[in-house]
Length: 477
Image (cartoon, rainbow, N blue to C red; front, side, top):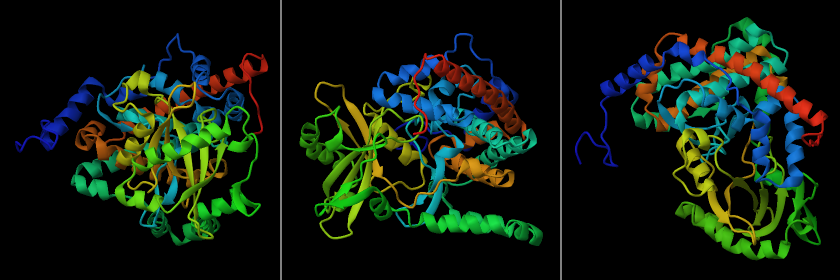
């Protein structure tokens, strides 16, 4: 192997050549061009949303529309496909990396690493796919504008948060570009360290003023450590005739035995093979761990906003010892929202696509993360990825955020997204493209404000379509 080739036999560029690639990209697509957004005359956001409904559980689709109706921000959360189509019309740098594909601020959060540390990272990869790095940055920045407006922030306040996210991304990427790649892969964000750093930067007055908020944050972190599978089992299951069973709460949680649109015996008969297939996708040591458990119960669960209508199953597994159990979530994975614009996935199984993207972008992933393909009788193949239902999960309540808190959160999200992109993309080229000035930051946030305006119009269009009876929505669920 030549010293200029990597382990895959591809030509490896020198750092100087990588930097030149980034600067050439900036010549082709100036930083100011990232502000451009000219909606295509043919754009049809509601048509795109309805196109997704054709592959979903029909009776759940109105719940999805109802959740998207709540506010412009909930609409934004469910409209990843709409934004992917819009991003495809904007100027791009041509610098590609593994994208989250849905990098809005609610898709970040804290969870337990395998080393039992509470880490902050991206936590949703349903749309992950390689693509232009700035698509994720634009979706993140626009989410802060949309959420800030929903919270009643002034323009100065929500723009400050969006700028903080992009500036944090840019400065972190430039920092990662100067680090060895192994350092980038080892980098992770521990929540306690982030809070300690934040407190250290406050004046005595700032500490006094923020005392209540800091206490609330620390209490939330303590609570997160209790939100594991055992806590979920206590909340979502009960003992029936001496056996533990998932509690049915239709239409949001429905046990397999109570579902009328499926044959429980037929599904149960295939589960052994499906779990064996899933087991094969785990690391060898984790297969041994899984072998301690047997399947005890199954239920269907409605999750998220954009995901509503896809199949999501809760699997209760028990170890045969009192108190030893785990809840897994098997979530259906369809083609990425980016697939029609950024290119098809190299993986034929969309569950594997999600898992591979998550491993690439996260600093550490759930030990039970794997995938399978189900073949229901008389239906098309269904791909799934599996993970623990809860493991110290913590998500901020966006609606309760105040401006200073949103700025801090934006900085965490920007750093985290840069770290995720730096792992799989050309961090040196991207850093060279971004440069040292705030030109990129301001251009992205200018775009974000225009896109937030468009998102509000799209939300209003959905509301009008529901009011006119053209689209069915079920609210309150």
